[in-house]
Length: 531
Image (cartoon, rainbow, N blue to C red; front, side):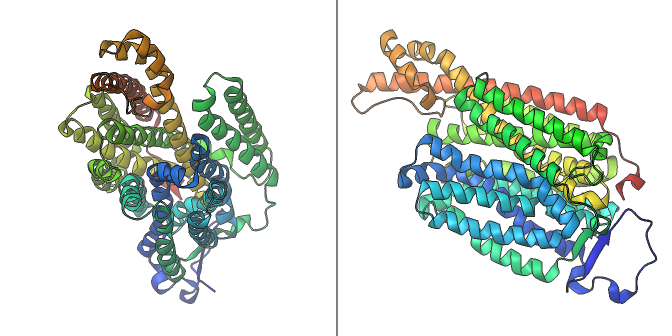
């Protein structure tokens, strides 16, 4: 039997005999951090690497655009719906157990995706992958909260945030290399060696941690159903909003139903003896604001990365590998920012680091307003660095604000809450910012084509290709005269950049608002509240 570390709400009993304490590797919290980094890296990498593989998946399996959207959306839906459940199960039955189950399931699902042989199989196993990701993700933070003392927890979260940020930012580079030099299946197969090494190492070093006070509590099945259905409806509305239109009946109906279910869930949780998500957690302003800032952080990161990759590949003509390498400053900056943000948070509290990180992201977004269809790389890397610094700093400080301000016994639930906010923010960022680009392209494409020298009648006809232009592609054909083709490319790219400028302006304003909310609303929590 592995040694167990448990916590409860009862006064601390006298220290047990030394023979009852975790010994050797299991007593070292830094080895716990290394172990959970394997699972965290797989989930982070898989969240962004698929965007590079999607075009090749479509060609190989004959998938439609809608099919490819579901390759991403099925993963997001399963992940978002089960994250808080995964944290609660870990808190109650053992975080080590559910982390290991998550690693095994995620690894096997990744291999199954590569072997599926059909787009339907890929979509189905992506959903399975998302579910197991939801079991492992929140328990990474839950275990760290349990094994690290409060004075060192901030630095542990900083390293955790660094792994998460870097794995997400490295996705386009790794994906580009694998798709270009191996095949799209290798994007998923790469999780096999990571998962096996992580599983063996974790079995050797992870202690078992759980909330022993919850052992006799009745499990909140009604809360599980209400929360899962509410999150599914909200995320479904978000990911379909771009296709259906944000004011369509389907989009508004799905999101309204989801919000209503979440309100019912919140009311129900205040009246049940053993809630899935204790509403008392939100009495802490730092935890509540940290959850919102976590969502905003990934709204900006994933949304910006999505259209930046379109810009680099479809407008500038770089290969996937070349595009990924050009975003490397973002990854490197996040490596620096996460531990730096953790150190600053430990000393000054998240009231400094969360607004600072949001301000850096705002600067990055506003700087991108200067980008054009033929901008040099010297105008690109400064906002990449500012974005990486901001994302890494916010990731560290918001994680500390959410999980660090929750009682140790609720560490897994708090980790699930933070991860849920992260995933919903990322889904919103990709959908909303791309939708803004599409809307702006639709309203300016004809004028931009005409200004570039395309005859008015031809420009009017080409306006039907606005969806392709919103992805950075110019609607040219092989039989177009060279002069006309050049004009179409110029006008299409200008329309796309109009959309990019609208998106980064909105993202920048949201970052400024987030910085102000964090600066005004967050206070350093008393040390006693963090136990």
